[in-house]
Length: 368
Image (cartoon, rainbow, N blue to C red; front, side, top):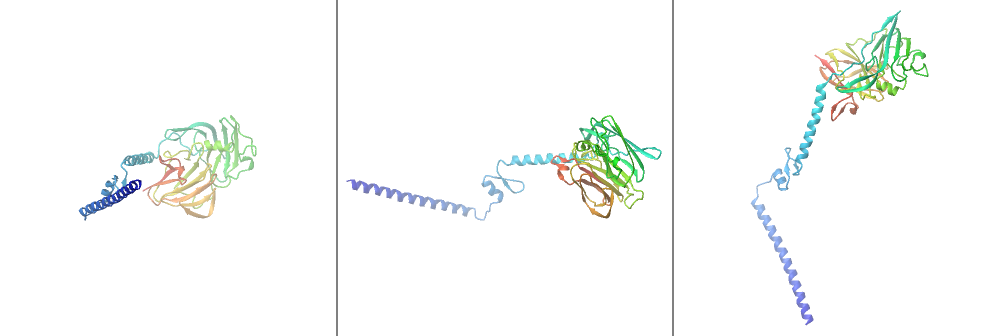
C-alpha cells in the first residue's frame, strides 16, 4: 500500500513537470509568433530617431538629441544663466570708458628758481574711485593716483620736495635713476624716514634718460600698494628714432590694495588710448605691482625698443610682452589697423570673469 501511494505521488509530480514545460514552450512560441506578425505589419515603415525616443519614453530636443522627460527645465535654467552672463559682459563693454571721480598721472609743471626745476609733492590719504561706485582708501601724491607725472631733461638740475601728511613715516625712491647715494630714498640706509608732518628735499642732476618711477621705499608693500607711486621720465639730450611719437602714453600697472588697475583705474573706468590711423604710439609700461603682467595688444604688434629706460641694441616685435614687478618697457606701435582693439593683461583672472571684463583691460582706438 505504501509503495503504491509513493508510486502514484511520483507519477503526479512527473505529469506536472511535463505539463509546465509544455506550457512554457507554447507560451514562448505564441510570443514569437505575435512578434513576427507585428513585424510583418510594420514592414517597410521605418521608425525615425524621434519616434524611437518617444517609444522609449523620452522627448526630442531641438538639436535632434534626446533627453529625459524632466531635463527641459535644466536646459532652460542653463540658457537663462548664459543670457545673464552675456548681459553682464555687454553692460561692461557698453559702459567703457566709464566716468569716475579723479584722474591720475597728470603732468606736474615745475617751479624754476635759479635754473633749478622744483617739484613739490604732498603725500596724504584720500578717497579714490577705482571704478563706478567703488571708492577706496588711497595714499597719494598731490591727491591723484598715480601721482603726478614728472618730466625733466637729461642734465637738468632737479629738486623734489616731499611733504608728509600721512599717519606714518615715508620716503621717495627714484626707481631706475642713477642718482647720488644720499638721494636714493631708502630710510636708515641713505636717509632718515620722513615722519608725519615733516618735509624732506631731494636734489640731483637728472642722470640716465629713460622711463623711470618714483615711489615710497618705506613700508613699501603697503604704501606703494595704496598708491604712493608715479612716473619720473627723463628725456634724452639727443633724441633717438623712437623719441618723436605722435602719442606718448605712460601705462602704470598695479595689483595692490585696489585690485588690478591701469593708471589707478579698473575696467570699465580705464582710459582708452586714442590715435589716428597711421600715427605712431609710444607706450611706457611701468609695473608698480607685485605680480607679472603679460600685456597683450590685439590687431597690431608692438616693437619693443627700451628696457628699464635703456635703448635695446636690437628692438624686437611681439604682441604679448611680460612686464615683471619694477620693470619698465617701452614699445612703439604703428597704428595701421583701424578699429577698437582690446588691450589687456593676459593672465586672464586679472581681466575677465563670468561677470564680464574687469581690472586690467583697456583698448587702443585707431580712428580713421
